[in-house]
Length: 418
View 1 (cartoon, rainbow, N blue to C red):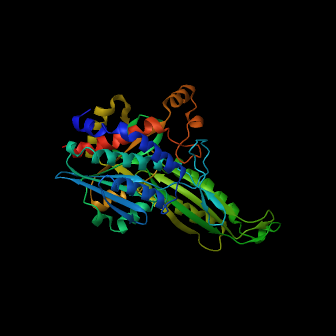
View 2: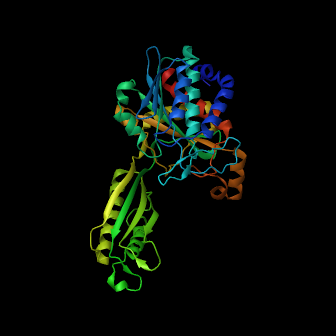
View 3: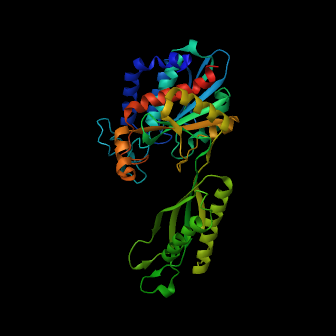
């Protein structure tokens, strides 16, 4: 451990109980995207008490906290805050029982099924330790708490609300995410690390009729079924086997009864790709297939193809990733690994893009190591290890929390310690 890292992380033992309590509190009180008022207030209060200049309400509920400590680099670290509309099934004593009114008026369960509560806690911990050891570093540390990552609009909302004027221009932007690897593990990867994601809503139109008189109809259910089958050939026959692509039809809705042919069907699908050329090719193929199947079925009108969400690919810049990887190797030893490319998606890259600066994004393991090792040994990781967005997903508090705080501090000090 370098002397600056030793000096900054010396405060972790005394900070640990408060941080663990903060994590349990955030986990027990999750909030959906752009409604993270309580979470944001907790983060803002913690950093204001450490001497940070704090701006709240950026992009709705975002928080920007700045600690200037003399001349030197500017490092920005980002944590996402939002939870998911999932009913928790972890059985933890601090499990969420929170609900919010849904669009249909019924109560909608909410839980931190992706670990953003851990991200917030780790960034608060890192910011607190840096504030308590100013003699060990020089420069400016910016802690950014972002809303609505799950919806893909939180980073854009902060940028649109003047983020680049509210925070000093960073030399680098850092971010981390808990993943279902063994706790204590940290993984970096230069280049492509997370996929782009595009969600589409496709409405195809037929002609309704009595179920006993199909000759009078143009059946949109059959049309939708043919589209689903044909879309499977995009990955298997139009993209090279060495180019990872995922295309999932997650929802089909048509009709209201068994004896009525409806006049339309709605499909919702999601595409994951890693580069712009493949992304464009796959999206063009989806549109071509939808239109061709409608024409083949004699549809009375053209289909509607709407993009409902879009996440950019996350492509780590080479130089900062190498610097962080070296710092992790020196601090974590054999627990610092190369991260596999992930099919998940993120919007955090919109923040460094707005500033025109490089970034790096890494993974932190959060599964009980013994449980993970047993599942690997028995070949049951897919069945036994809950992944992000599962109702059973929850990081083990330790050593996940210590690792996440340490990783963010060590990465930041790779610039701030000279």
